[in-house]
Length: 265
Image (cartoon, rainbow, N blue to C red; front, side, top):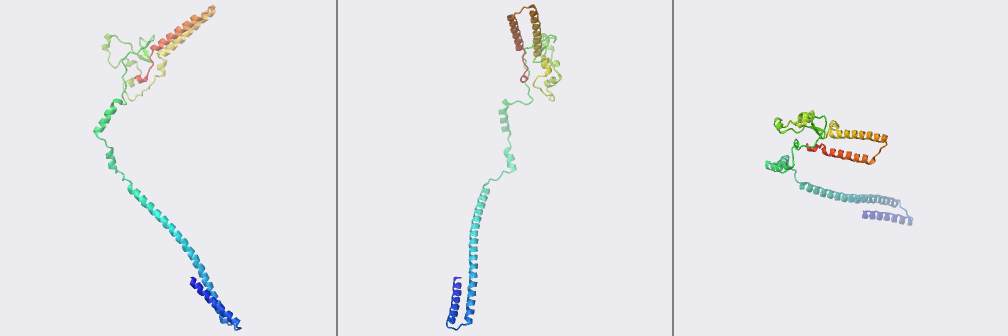
């Protein structure tokens, strides 16, 4: 490109020199002027071609830089793909369903050893603790025909030795138990077990009777106090002693009553 430009400039310079020489000799030649115009047009075309060449060169440089960037990205992507492929090939194969089921199977000896270890510390869900044969301390109530109430439940009195042979084992006092409790004691699975005493049993128990006796004693004491006030005789020391005696009697009576505990069943 430089040689072409130098040739065009040289042609333009020669045409201009011939034209100026002809003018200087007072013999102007129009042909020299036409040659100068043609040389000037050639220089213009070469300059436009140079501008196009420069723009193309700049575009080539830009495309070359872009090509280098794309090559770097491609190499990085290929490296990542190779690493991912290596990681995928390094993953161990998953076991088949058949091998998984075989691994979970247990033989009979293992199950028996496990059962022998847990047997001393476990009980079946239907197991119920037997009712203790120890006689519970009860409170005799008047009008019950010798029947003792323990924790709100009626228990029959002990029978003489001569009559024990006529009583069948397992049915002693079963008639005095209500129908839901009878079904539960018989082992019927349809009857639900309630681990607390009902309100009726509490109201008919020994504690309720003791509370009634205490209220009656307080009413009687109130009447005596009224009589003493009417008579004008007040003995505070004797009243305090009587109150302490009554408190000791109530505490002693309550100590003889055993509260119902569902864990004892």
